[in-house]
Image (tube, rainbow, N blue to C red; front, top):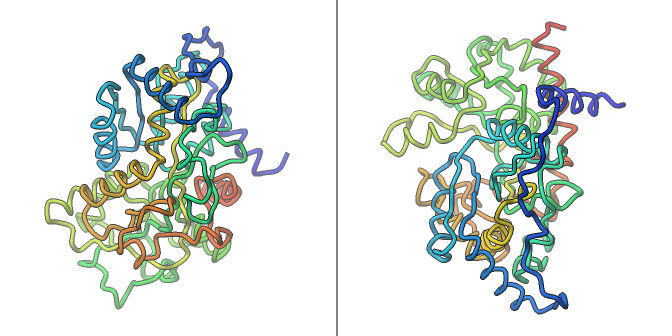
Length: 391
């Protein structure tokens, strides 16, 4: 077994160690409950109409998203179009939802339909645990299933199995500076993270799982190599903090001049109220591409409503609602306001800041939240374990 596979196996065993016996499934219908015709017609419109009717009869859907407000904006637009389908919206951080849904599924509890989120935990933990349905049986609309409607003329999935559809790849990093403490003349690029003057003065979210810090370090690893990342973790003696909210508050309060792995919603809330103008993101170097995806969770209790939501969210209308929600609910710059759909125009900020990836040349990025980027992520996690152990 390779060291990477060993790390994955160990992480998985830790996650489910408490589950020693599984109860019987709850009877959630899953794909077997999808509306189908007796003759398996190829008429997509007829199948779509039957699916929408069946979804209205189900009358409900449970959608899980990250905590960012723009997901709520998109869901509200869906509810306006399909008022007969009541949406239960569960807003939860992926790092918190992942162990919850894995444990529940291992115990035969299938209470969620769709998950929309950055894809790291989806692809690294839940997909290997067989926690998703395959998307193709749920996809109906030609504007969703035809590759020419997507940038790069291809439909992206996070893994070799088509279980999580990528609706956005975002080129970014997560290093922020408090300019009241550190002017641009002293710190303005990633290479300066190894400056001796910053030793002991950086706060970093503990990179022990796929999240903003480990993603950023994977991007650095992709461009600068393992030695740079290990020196950053070990020689620079950063302060590791588990809680992203507390880390962000410490950066805002001026306790530390540089932070990695900050909580975006905490910073957004401060900036929406007119504060935190002194907090600046360092951009343009050693960035990673983070996948944002949508998948049908295993044995969804409302499979037809899940199909309707999945198709709508991946349609031009759904992706435009997502982009509009980002502009309406987050402070500028709007670097996240773009989609992998070719017919949804990115916000000018996203283009200017280089957040829209070159979908024809994805090999240039550390592809995080996707199977291809898994080895780099595991290398970062393993490196932190060695540093933590003092080895």
